[in-house]
Image 1 (cartoon, one colour):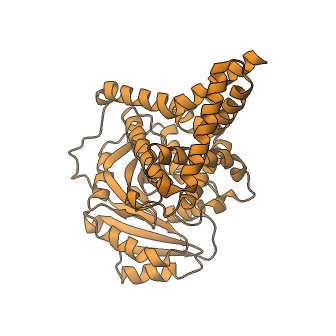
Image 2 (image 1 turned 60 degrees about the vertical axis):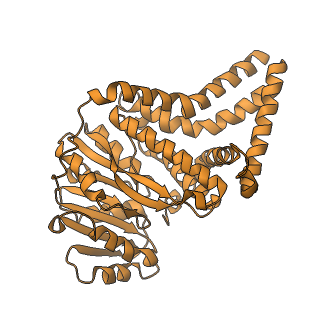
Image 3 (image 1 turned 135 degrees about the horizontal axis):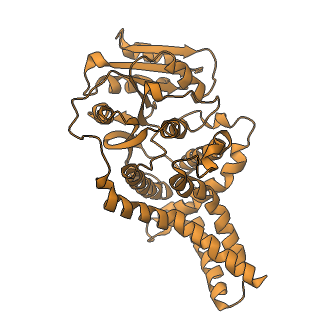
Length: 387
């Protein structure tokens, strides 16, 4: 029993260390060493501006959809090559009418109003039936784009081997909100760096839902109720033999979540979507059939297992013999207590080094812990309602 407890502790500690430190460090080192040797899209091809359609799937976005349309139409992109397609997914407010008002008769803007709410995946599928441009860009209603975002997002498609391109989501005003949310901003910066390094190694398997593009011919319809369209679409592109690229200079700008609870709900939705994706794409678990297995397994799947590993490590250290494990057990309990304090008292935590990060770490892993039962809900697609 004692030997099993010791082995379980170190195995679980190893999983957590690999997920949050080992794998990101390995990818960074490999990208710095070998990334430049891979064939990259010509960064000077900003003159490559294919016809594009920006698809915005919206649900009850009356207050924001007008500004979103104006933001897209104001992009530094040839006006005759740009179209906007807004899909109101059975909104209960005046989202569709607000979109038409914002378009003000501009023929480049089309509004598709669905009679009932059918979920984002179905809304995107129906939108794609109306898209005829060679490149389609997917956008959310809540963000805005930097002035050259669409031009930078489209440029890599000059390389015929690239099937999907992700932009970069930048969270602004992070310091103005609650402490745990501010720490999540640090987590997101680390995630952006990891995705950029994966892109350089041709390991990228997820994109930013706020700003990503795909060749029209590479798009495969999403199963109804799919939560993570920003994982399904690039994975289908990669499985078909095309590259998924990240254009870090194609920037979408978002505000940080107003509260830790809002950020927690968003993370829970994303993590539940990863479980759903495994059920709908079992090929992901097959090392020989999934060309991105190592990256996906280390980056996504093990993150789902990390909270279970943390719990098992805590239990194993409680029963393992010897003073070392007693100390490790006490340190874990103290660490979780400090993290809980950081979540409960954010203003106090702001004055204490590492406390905000500890609180964010626990919240993220709590979301991962709850993501499995959330994914088994009768209608998990309802996790997507507002972005």
